[in-house]
Amino acid sequence: MGDVLLLVNALALGPDLDVGDRLEPFVFEAKLDELSARLRSSRRALWRTAAAGSSEDVRVAVVEVLMVPEEVVDDEFLLADVRRRPRAAARDRPRKAMSVALRPAAPDDLDFLAGLYADEAVRPFLAAGGRYERDGIAEQLERDPEEGGLLVVELDDERAGAMFWERRNVRSRIAHVGGIAIHPDFRGRRLADDAARLLQHHLIRERGFHRLELEIYGFNERAIRHAERSGYIREGVKRKAYRGEDGWVDGVLYAIVEEDLAEPR
Image (cartoon, rainbow, N blue to C red; front, side, top):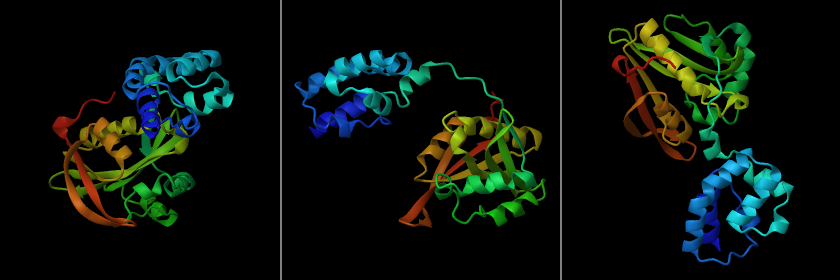
């Protein structure tokens, strides 16, 4: 039975949809290979139906594709287990135009920045030795703007996130970037990718840096995907470089140089 549930989750609904608990009582009268073939051929149709169809369309799709007994496919099941982030259908839709901008952080941004960096979904992924508490952020706001500083990410003129940069090498024109954080209300729109490209363009094209460097904890898979989407090149791993709460943690090194830079979208 466990193999069937894993198959349903992996092939039919994708990694973000977990219906294992609800499907546990159900008995599937099919061999695993037959179920696998049926789900592989039907998963995209189910995703698109879940994204665009009516509740009744979704109900029919779940009953026919997953063989879930019709009497248990109620509204709670549909809303909780099927219509939650249908990823394949979302990829097929054109991306909504967004106005993303970067600006230097100002004193009246302090409350926003302190709240953002204190968020439990943000702080564990930032450098443990970074000054992300309120006093440390206030010091960053007083920093020489030629040497680095905090930037606020805005979406349609609304504060949505933050990042920082600092000069690391004058002669070789190297800057370090980090502290990338997007407020939970604005996630899921690849906003950090757009902001990262803007920062790359600003530092290389406008400020004359030759190389930008970025380091990410090895466990931070979301940030690693972001770096690679944004154009950073993976250059290596510092093995067991940092002591974490559960042991030693790798540091993954990324960089982009002037020749790598594409024009902002």
